Length: 326
Ligand SMILES: Cc1ncc(COP(=O)(O)O)c(C=O)c1O
Image (tube, rainbow, N blue to C red; front, side, top):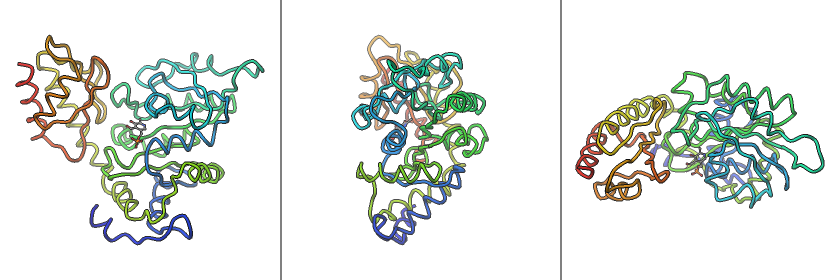
């Protein structure tokens, strides 16, 4: 990847185009089965560009109650687009059809207009579950019946593809716009993609410009993203296998609680139920052993497996937890 970055041919993407950025955008558009794709600095910007294309001030977006796009993007949907939201509980990211239908507002002047449905593939809040294709097709059907667009926060869509065997484009076909992250499990240092049809891409270009996300000689970093998409997708299976082992081995330690549902991808939510430790104190203690992990809630730690860790690191983690927890 570093070699690809060093060798990247660059140009000014904001003026006459950067050839490496263009190559990445075409590759990503093909992989997602969309007309076009834009390279942007972060997953947050990819999502917010899409929201900016679909929403006007006062519009309402429907999303899961723990959707990243609403809960972890600093209030951007309201701050940038003047949008309001209505949220639904889900079963591992999957909406209940009748609840979803009931949240779409009637065409009534007192109500905010429903303007967008968001889905998150994989679903971070439940520990990286894959939303099955049927469930996404249900959302598509409901949206079509009501003339609504669907945005997919596919930050970890590549993980869903590898875990399920379903082509990324089949998942993406259920949405009008899709965001994917080239960092995270795919291992690029930075960068995300937002994709959609030709009309969406035209509008997305303007929103990207407004947000300051159109980068000039970005080929150096786009080369890393291209390398990630070309070489690092199928290897995600290794991360998924390691995540399963991690759940089993940590869950067997006193004071830690394994996820109740099977680990499907690279995220593992481990419960902490210990007389002396909560997730924050355990994360701090693990940091002293050289293991970095994120407390996700007052009761859970979020472990992530990725291309820079392997079985030896898992041994080190298990030994550290055992030493800390006693
Ligand atoms: C589901 C999901 N969407 C979007 C993002 C945003 O990505 P970034 O951190 O690149 O802004 C994340 C980041 O963790 C995420 O987990």
